[in-house]
Image (cartoon, rainbow, N blue to C red; front, side, top):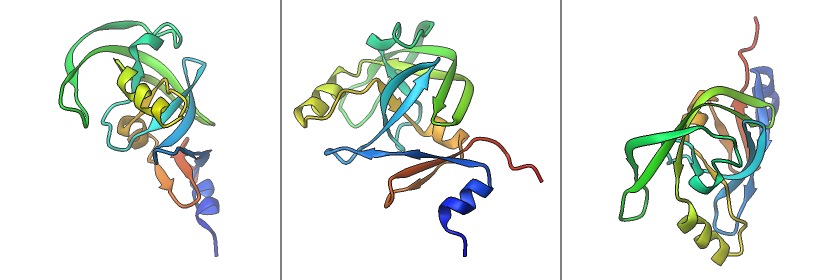
Length: 151
């Protein structure tokens, strides 16, 4: 009998290791436009975000956005948007993806209080949906479909 890993590999999925933090978040390494960063994997975030202060770090071209971001906090957050970015998470790659830029200082301050390293952004449901994500919470792996299996 095939295990989950073998079955998903046969379907064209790639496997990415997740690091569980003391705050029970999963941290994941990714590259945006070829530049590395640490991100939080957030299945509840509708869009992937990068910290406004990291726009130059990831070579993002930004423009004003009329949309406000909201989360678990009480207030809406001003945003910028950056289009046509490339994301690589392990061997998984996405091209021409839009990212929201927000102030992540409150998130990073909360992480630092728990002695967790600051993050550059949040990988959200937009990336997870495009990658047909499967999360193995027990073994701490994220599986993303990189290509369709040729029949």
